[in-house]
Image (cartoon, rainbow, N blue to C red; front, side):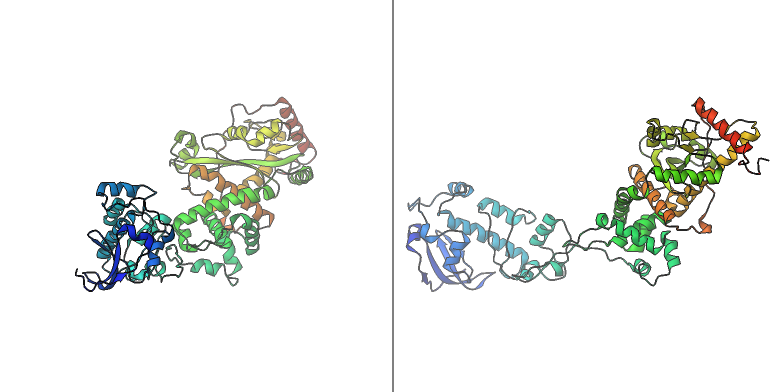
Length: 544
C-alpha cells in the first residue's frame, strides 16, 4: 500500500480530543484499486466505503456527534488487554470506535478473500473484537447475522447453486431447503422462499376426479358412488381442510379423502397410494390416519349409534318378520382382523385357532358388532387381542356394561354358539340330540345370524384392508377399523351395492363357552320361544 496527496477532511469539534483525522488517499492493494477515504489512528488505516459520508459513519456506530462524551482525554493510547476488556462491556466509550471499525475491517477482508468477489457492504450487529476475528475464520457459525446492502448475487455466487455463509445460516434457522435462483435476488426486493418438493405425477387422480370419468369405474375404485363420495367430503371438509402456507399449497379435501378411502378399499401399500395421488409416502400415511380419525369423530355419532325407542321398535318388527322371534333388537357377531406381530404382549394377540387351521402363524385383533335387519352396525367393540374367545370379548365390551345396567331390558341380542345364554343374549341350543322344537329355534336363530354374518362379509369385502395383514402400528388399527365400520354404514344406508365378484365366504371359529348358560330365566324363556315357533307354524318347512 502506498499513500500520496493526502487531503484533510473536516472533523467535528466534539471529536477533536480523539486525536483522529481523516485523509482522502489513493490506495492500491490486492483488493482495492480506487480512491477511498481512510480513518487514521495510531499505526492503522481504516478504509471507509466511498459511498458513505461522515454522517453514515455515525449512523453505523449508532452515535450522535452532538452528544458524544469524552471520558479519557489523555494522549496515552490504552493497552491491548484493557482495550479488549472495554470492548466486552456493553457501555463502551468513544475510544472504542477505531478498534471497533478495525475489527469490522479485518473480518471484511477475510470474507472478501474467501469469496473472491467485489466488496460488499454490511451493517455490523455485535461489537466484540475477539469474537469477530474468530468468527471470520469459522464462517459456519450461525450467530453472526448481516443485512445486505448490495446485490446478493455478488455475495452468493452464480445461480448454479454455489453455497455461502448467508444461505447456510438462513437454511439452518428456517430448516427448509431452497434453490439458488429462488433464494437470491436484488437488494430491496423481497425474495419468497419455497420448500423443495419432489415432482410426482397426479395423472391418475386427475383422471378419476374428472366429471367425465365413468361412474362404474369410480365405484369400483372407491366402493361407493360419486354422490356418496361428495357427501363424505362435505361432512369432513371443516375438519380435514388445511390452510396454504408460504412453503407449499395444502392438499385439497377431495384428494385427501380419496387417498384414504382408496387405501382402505384396496388395501394396497402406501407406495401405491403415493403413485396414484402424487403424494409422498409419509404424507399418505399421515393423511390416512387423519381422515380416519375425522371419520370416527365426525361421522360416527351420525351414522353409528344405538337406536332410540322408535327405531328399536322398527328393528324388532323387522327381525320378527324374518325369524318369528319377538323382541330381537340386533344380531351379534365377532370377527378377527390379521395384524403383524406386536412388539409387546405378543402372546395375547396370537390366534391359535387361525394358526392351526391355516398352518401359518397368525396374530389378530377382534371386531365385535351388533347389526340391524339391513346390516347397519348399531354397536361395535374394536381392538381386543385375538387370543380372546367371543364370550370374553363380549364381557369386556361397553355393550355388556350397558346391559348389566338395564339398558337392554326386553331386548334380545341374538348370537351364535360362541356366546353364553344370558337375560339379553339369545343363542342356539348346543346339545347333541336336539328335539324338533329345539332344532326349529336353532334354524330361526341362524337366519338372524346370517344377517350379521353377511354384514361382516360385506364389511371385509368392501374394505379389503381388513382381509390383509395390516402394517400399521397397533395403536392406530382401532381408528382405521372404526372408520371402516362407519363407511360401511354409510354405504348400506345409501344402498351402495356390492359386486358379486367381491363376495367371499367369511369363516370365524366358534368355541362354545364352558359356562354356556348363565341365566335360568333365560333358559325357560328360550324354551317357550321354541315351543311357540313349532306349534304356531312359525318354524318353517325344514323342521317338518
